[in-house]
Image (cartoon, rainbow, N blue to C red; front, side):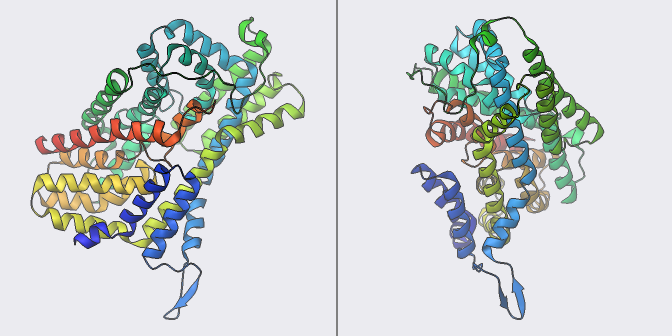
Length: 461
């Protein structure tokens, strides 16, 4: 059983991916290599071939088919990136950044806490997820440099805002997460409702808050120097558009942003579950409004420039998400996830604390592999729920364990949008490393507290 636990395609491929990323190898290539390694280790053929008279799907076919499942998110990210670029060009983003600088820009820790709150709005109030980062953060980098704010603390603030609200609050992306938890626990034999989930999420959100406070006030409290460099991808902005009075172009940008928000609200109400196509529809609507108001300038070149800028801002993230989806599909097809789970349970035996630790480790490995908490929940629920019911864990303990096991790993993984989002803004001037300044700080400060609190809470519920 120890062999099944450690010499497993899931475990080994995750280790390969992590090592390559720590060595600063390209993220996309690291994920592809990890996927190929997992498939070959599991005996998947590189090309389609008949085995015992039946055609077996190849490794690369599986990988490419998995990528197709992320097309809607990739399109939404590119279009939202175009919106972010257009908002930059209008000067509205810089105006808002200066307002934040005047209100909170003299006290570094207060600014970081406000940044976490704003990030939280992107999950619930205005559910555009990580698209707010390239809109808001790059104009604030000069101010952050003056305050000598360690960008690792800023990465933790943004990651907290991207993750904690969907864990705790049943709105926006949180509604999706809570529905996934409730539906999969119910399918696995324990009847629960989405409305009953959120009270048991309070300890997990509190654990993340503790991690954030440690990052801001202990780990990264010391000043860190950065140079004032030009942004790598930036729209040309007229200084008068930033310092002068509101113009028609500003009202067009503001109306476009409000339209994006309105479409999200309408979609949430009309189609429960916050459909992802609403992100794309909202972005396209906003661009059309900005075009009509002259925010983009009624010349085709300006609209084309925004689309190209959007690809520059968010295209890399979109492609990483596509590749990560292909990797996740390969891991599922290897059968290694089920083997990993049963091996860990066999080793844990009847010991409740060992079983809880094993479940948290398995959840971490799976989420690290597939890159999303939302996709981990269905994979672990089918096995965890019956096992915990046999060990007489309470329904509350089961809910906490499933949520904690699924949530850990989302923060800190190179291919996760919770890590890619902060880097998209903080590395706008080329001074923030994705692995060492985003992934490792967020992994340490959020995953460990969630796991510890999840285990302790489950033992006492």
